[in-house]
Image (cartoon, rainbow, N blue to C red; front, side):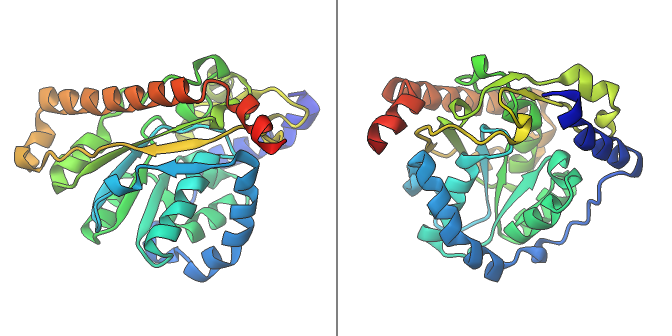
Amino acid sequence: MSEQRTRPLIDRLEEVAEQGVETSCDPDQRDTDFIRTILPGLRTWLRWFDASVEGFEHLPVTGPMLIVGNHSGGVHMPDYWAFLSEWIRQRGVDAPLHSLGFDLVFSIPGAGTLARKMGTLPASHEMADELLDRGATVLVYPGGDADDFRPWTERHRVDLHGHTGFVRLALRHGVPVVPMVSHGSHDAIIVLARGDELARTLGLDRLRIGVMPVVLGPLGLLTPPMPAKVVTRICEPFDWSDLGPEAAEDDEVVRHCYEEVLGRMQACVDDLVAEVPHPVRTRIATAL
């Protein structure tokens, strides 16, 4: 991205870094009427990716539960939108689904308001505790912005960056953990670099923003995605309730559970890559 194009965004992020992100956390800001209004347009947009969701039967019938995903596709996130669309089709718009988003989302003017209406809230342990106590389904992406903006060359790799908070959360609440992976979203954009050092230089680490990514295309971050076949697969869940809440304080148990989840997610991604090795080529072929 050129300096001229990125300067307004950089200026805005520097300003937010000084002021901080508004982290009000009211789950009741989820607006079902708003979701119903945008759903037809969302489903039309998802046709660009011929997006599909597999394995929905692995989700428990009712919450609370914790869905743990790998994150791809930069700001476009077709994997997230595909799952949201399928959730509403299968469970209805009133079924409580919330996702926890990284602070970058809430630093962009208007994006935070939109996110809250969709049921996304700033990620925090307190927020996750409250949502699970309410019996909600909570979707988390432990890899955060570093995962969402990983280089294109690492698009087939699941990397949760050692973040074990979701394991401790599930153990404390005794809820099932449902791994969910996607393939194809990260073929739709080409991330050249995360921009870790640039983010630190700008002081964005104060917002828990660890990246200022370099994306190939005339509009940088906002470059429209290429057509790519996107598949989201829900894997078999883990139930650690027999370990008891005290296991959340046992680092060895937590690490073991983390590796279990990571291993299952990577195996599922490897299967998807074998099934759809060229998502862009596949999508173009099906469109012809």
